Amino acid sequence: MRKRNLNMKQTKRFTCCLLSAAMAGTMLAGCGSSDKAADTSAAAADDGPVQMEFLGGQTTAEVDDNAEVVKMIEERFNIDLKGFYVDPNNFQENLNVKFAGGEMPDVIVVGSPAELATYVEGGIIGELPIETIREKAPTFAKVADEYDDGSLWSTMIYNGKNYGVAQPMNQSPMAMFWRKDWLDKLGLEVPETLEEYEEVLTAFVEQDPDGNGKKDTAGAAERIFGAVFGAFGLRCITGVGTGSGFTVEEMQLGEDNVPFFPYIRPEAKEALTVLHDWYEKGIIDKEFITGENHGGYAGLSHSFMNGQIGLTCAPPYTYFAYSSDMKAEDNLGICMKEMVAVNPDAVVVPGPAPVGPEGKSGTEAWGKIGRLTCLTTKAVQDPRKVDAFLAMLEAYYSDIEYMKLSNFGLEGVHYKQTEHGPIRIMDGIELRKQGVLQADFGATVLYAKNLTPEKTEYAESITGNGYYRFNAPPVEEFSNVISTLDSLTEQAYFAMITGEKPLDYFDTFVEEFKKAGGEAAEKAVQEAYAEKLAAVQQ
Ligand SMILES: [Ca+2]
Picture (tube, protein in one colour):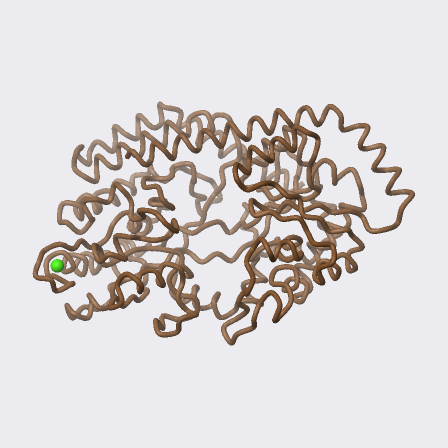
């Protein structure tokens, strides 16, 4: 619980940073008109390369003008490619200082619709009409249409206008990872249903799977809560990164395309009933409240690595890249490498998410929506910058060689080609200096299909249904109460799982959640989302 409180404070601090960015932006907007006149006349007088300054994320670097990739990209699009450098220590504060001083890049990647709204209000991000995108980047538009479940194009709408482009991603859901050596020792198979899960996990508690003669193992911990909720049709996010606890701000998009809070649905009580029962039986690690991660890479599960539990849940690539072969070293993900180092005898296999009583199953998945790339108010004033940006976007979707050049660079210099796909041989900062990862659009659906097909197919083969992230449109009814709702849910859920409160307390919790602003927030988000959908269809 203590850890979670820290996280809440961090969230607040981040919001404050964004607000000051908005204020800085307001100042900028005041002096924007003179820039506009200057830019337009310069564009008319000069047909030379137009300068494009990119800020792709927190890992930023100045671009080396003489690098080969830089020259290739510059010639192709008739641009002068620059990286917008921001000191990564206190990144947001340093970026705000630049905004306040009147500096901004041409292209900027934002983290969420809420951040988009703040930057639009602050005069940092400029409008990019959907019809312009459709006209200048038709291949992108076609792919976006194909993968849009309603939430793709609408992500970039704010107050009825479009700002930037959202990338369609092919993110695999989380996979379940088992201790195969424990299963083998007890003569058990990888389970498939919730009932079978309970049998196997009970054996992990009762039958000494690590063979040390002590009853000192549990079945699983917090990171499988999402799969248990998934067995009842709900999206539940727990144990993200170094924190523990439930992430209430990520809502669920229903099959009817209406977003809702999964935590107050009647099915949530059924999932909590299972978790409480498993907690009582010792299946859920009694220390689950402190989370599975205790430092280092946020995806690590120390409880799993140390042999305290026999099952965890994680993104596929953090354990295996292209198969479950633990002998192939380049196949091991960051978590698996650490696990083997700590526990050389551990054998790990993936398995399916548990199927619930009504046949439902699934794990949480990060967004179907990837990078949110925007043009600044500075860039949208110059039609040549808009054209260059959309030409780069179009190239990324219509020319696999350009996608590879801008994301991986040159073979033998920046990456090596292996039978399992390209592997980078240079670090991120250095790559960015040389123009790689500057003018790219990330691991899009086409990227997954064409550049890393083996890894994509493997991840798909070990996962099933995903409950994808829904980014709530920024509405005050939501943002004003979400911290309160988060704390309320967390306290009630922990209390019901551990038995501090009876399961029937769920109904009281739902009433409190609604009264604390949850009902109004859900309604406001639903309305705002419907408005966004309507704006896309115009
Ligand atoms: Ca034992």
